[in-house]
Length: 102
Image (cartoon, rainbow, N blue to C red; front, side, top):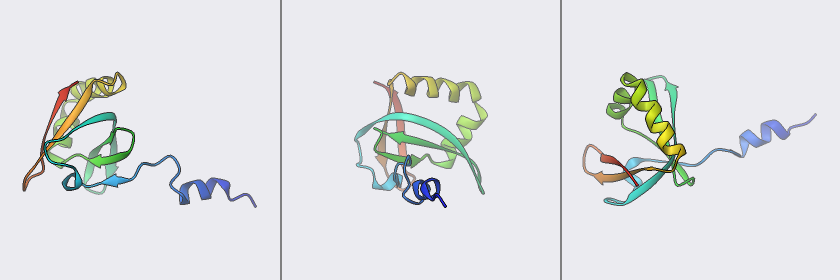
């Protein structure tokens, strides 16, 4: 029996580690390399890959805006593909953050 396929999944090949927003450095800008939507038991959530080194779940309030504004989400996907988008984590009780173009 060939276990190579299941071993890839078991070793998380092709997956970036996930960090909490609170683990990010406050006031630091992070380049977003991709953004995607996943379905969770709490509804649609958005994940960004940061500098191709780790992934971060965006807060639910941001996911709601991106889900409601599909055109806006598609534009963000294009901007990340063109290496133009970054986010800055501002910290605080509510994990404040902002997005901007490079």
